[in-house]
Length: 197
Image 1 (spheres, rainbow, N blue to C red):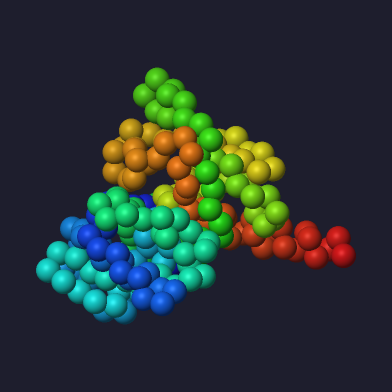
Image 2 (image 1 turned 90 degrees about the vertical axis):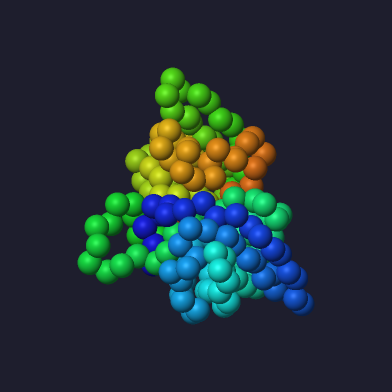
């Protein structure tokens, strides 16, 4: 379980394909504090540490993960939002994030707002995910509040701190991002769909 508060921006050091799996080696500030079998969120995707190096660690993404996220599009040198699992009993500054990406979305617009930015994203509505104004959404692992909500799109406001301390500064129009929708909203959506049958 995560909070959506990004701890560090990691850099992809190495990518190795093995059958349908992708081994990803990440360099980051907290790598030396990690242990094998620990969970780390990568652009919102929970992956298990499988190997440790001096200032880096390795994780493995399986085909299911690559199909549902943007991790398969990574290149060496890319920046990745990182968060270690939350510590029970600590302050929850974001929202409850599972690290299970629901689907990808595409950035369709960026507006400068005199000191902040409004990023708009579009996603496939056939998967029945939803957003609501002032509800929670996770974009590339970042806990955010929805500003505007449509049937297949939403926008979020990004303050300068978030822009500088996440990979939002790497997102452009057309960039593909990982989306994890609010867990309560997902249950409500499923119950609503079942009641119609």
